[in-house]
Amino acid sequence: MRIIKNLCGSFMLGSLYFLLLACLIPFLPLSLWFFDLIAHFQSYYFVLSLLLFSVAALLWCKKTRRKNRILQQFLGVSLLALLLSGASLAPYMPRPQKAVDNADAPILRLMQVNVFKFNRKHDVLLHFIHKYKPDLITIAEATPEWRDALKELTAAKDGWPYMIDQAKPGSNGMLVLSRYEFTQQESLYPATDTHPAILFRITVNDRDILIASLHPLSPVSKMRFKHRDSYMDGVAASLQQAQDGPVIVAGDMNMTMYTPSYKSFLRKTELRNARNGRGLYPTWPVYVPLPTRFKTENLMIPHLLRIPIDHVFYKGDIRLLEFTALPAIGSDHLATLTLFSVP
Picture: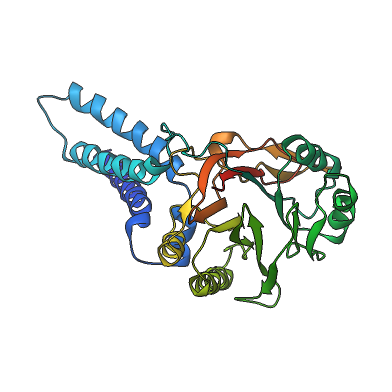
């Protein structure tokens, strides 16, 4: 009986040390595929660490005369995991924001969305576009069907007359719609010949703004992980070569804020995340397909179980006013809306 008890204790302690490793990954200078996969779930680890620490603390208080060595380790390791996961989440927790100096400056509204290639709810996205009236719309997984459904926006009065069309069958297509004329545009293929990165410039209030719309590969295999990082490295190199001025980067980047690859990209580009101090806003997955006997139904994923992989980054002489995730549009991703003041 004691052997079984010791084995159970050792297994639980080993699992706790694995949890500690997962919480430590965001602070390591290593970019490894397996580490990348388990780094995404820091909010999960925070809740789990809090529960384990609470249980260990209660047991510790009850066993005041006979301290158990395994319990001591549980208490210490769970506390350390709690602090590490909390440190990863802390920069994105909502906090009061400073008032914008020039309240009369023009506002640039950016909607970023991965529409999901199998999603046919074009009318839902059109509804939100007309409701929130973004000046720029960057779209990932844009198929020819989606391009045709959104073409009415380019012809509408007070619409979005400018379009960059990289729509393709499958998950590699992209679209950009704009109220502002493109003064420059370029499609890069930093890692593969299938996944473009669209860079373009617009002028707002006499300011030249460089904008990048991104959608690298999802790192579901070691090879795709390397392609994703090569893609982000290539974009970072292009942004580093650009002249000084405001820069905005938006898209489904298939990485959370907790991965070493994410931190490397921001370090190279000196960009800031629009989530900072405004909330986690997890965007994926909104649902997962659940096969049944006769059809596939969508199993909705609770908000707390999603992870933030759709981002907006920025730098330069523009002011962030708002960042938020929008209601579901039938995609497995939530769209985001970001407002900038352009003085």
